[in-house]
Image 1: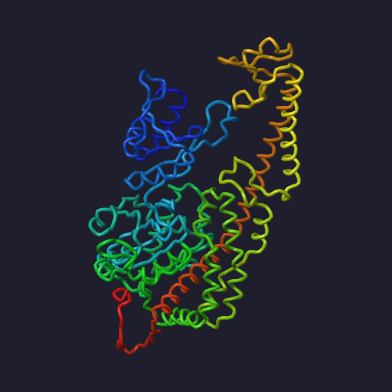
Image 2: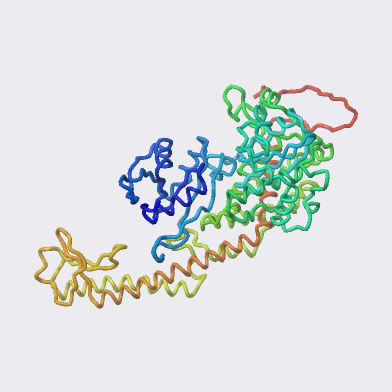
Length: 588
């Protein structure tokens, strides 16, 4: 280790903490992997394996991926069963004194993957925690890409567990006893520290995260201890791997066993609820017949309803009444659907708040989604139904935030904040002034270039810029004799020389300083907008909940109307009576 270069010593210090994880080590515009990690990554991702000087006699094997494309590479590795640690530069390399500080900011695992292009926009990716006791099981599952978090206590039954797992479709499972779940769990379970499943630890983590004084406030009474222990371990695992406050996980929903119908895998497959047996496609399944949703959130909600049929009569009647009210109002349905087409995946946008990755375009998408709220609320107010009124009560236009986004964020903003032009002109007088000087400074450079051409007689003289030398005057070899005495040489090239002057350096200093100030101010202003979004995250999540519920109900109403379905009557007499029954999938 003593012979290694300082950066490679830093890499090994990180790797020592995460020996079973591929470390993506940020170096400039790339994430680089070294030694065994590089060999693995080059093989699995079909990358070129190169080498890097590391202080040893032989170069260290190295492979790398561009930082802007890292998500796709990470997703491919996760799909192949690997875990990835993202090691970021914690300071600006240009400002660092010596070695740039780096640290792991997130560990990506199969259950914490957030890339919608891999998960599927209409699918969840749940991390599941299972606490096993002799008589009872505690289940908790969370999708960090949407913030959904659930917990349930159930009897220790292999069939019941399989049914629950069939509805959850976990991407990853943690448990204190992996051997007990072998052959039962749909994915290989990961043994997690038994101490993490302790009741005291669960209370500490859950109460701290949700800012409550007791587990009872979360709906976890003494009968729900196994669920609390599973949820506590899950929260501990998320803290360990995601390394952020996870502020978008704002509620824990308790699932009662008798609320929904348990369905084993064989039943799900034979009924073809969400995919066909042969082609594994949604088309040809019950979900394929019913899904007319226009938002990704609504699609996930409807899938959840199909996979977890209600058992409580009053809740069934309530949902049917809402669908019936929509069926009776086709004009309102059409208008509501058109409005929802302009709603983005707010749940996944809001998860970016916790990961500090919310960009300007995400803010614009939130703003456009919120703009639909007044029209949607006005239309819902014309429909007489209790369930629809409850849905409307969730939708909050958040007018202050909507106005802020519209006034502050440039409609043509780029994806990356370092490209500038994120903040709209007119929002900050100080930023507008800095931008004006920056624009004037560029004209000053052009004027200087024109004057120098006139003064020296060098017609092809150019003032250029690069990151290493800044601004410079470039003169071709054929014009060396015309170079005046006040030109100071900066660099010699094969066919040209590069110079500077006192006037150019003074102008560069003013221009560079202004650009840096503008960039810093723009970053600060955008951080303030991000914070404003974070401050309203509960209101925004409630709105997302209202939107997706409405979308799912509209989807069912459209299916009912187009297919001439009859609203069933729910009774408690135990008699099932079907008149002129049709199979919704077969008839298609």
